[in-house]
Length: 194
Image (cartoon, rainbow, N blue to C red; front, top):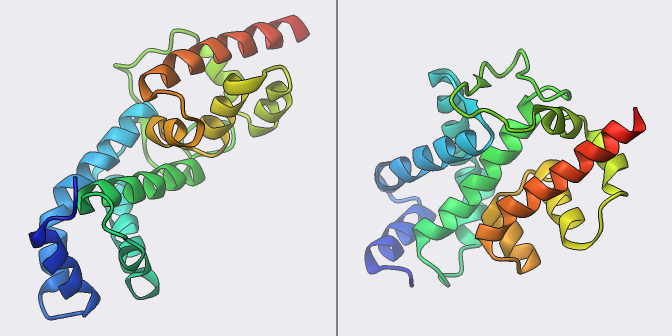
């Protein structure tokens, strides 16, 4: 989908820093960014508090305006503005959540999220294995090809399924099953080492 006339005009007004343009931009895209925050949190089995959610929203919008609207200036119009902003927002939120969680995978004192009790992990041992970056890197040596790439992109770089799909050429709906198989292999490798 191409850039709509309404979004093109709003983007031009923001980049020219016209009065009221930024408020209109926020009004237009706040719902989209809220959706991205909730979606990323859900895929990471996190339930952010209202304060955490507000912090994540602020971080996304600050990214949009940082360096004289650099993110908006880089938009080339090859997709809808909403699609572009979704990708940018997802990256910001994934990085923020990854950075704000403790190294062992639990919530840090700076991020009051808790694991979502409604999403049980079918292999909690595998999640524990994958929560320590050093262990992930060590165990990546046991994987090959696409599985290795997907685990690295998801667990070490915090990429979304969509971003992994774009980077690897693997269909987005195949990423989850490949991750599950790789986690199972890692769990077995770790169990054999102990």
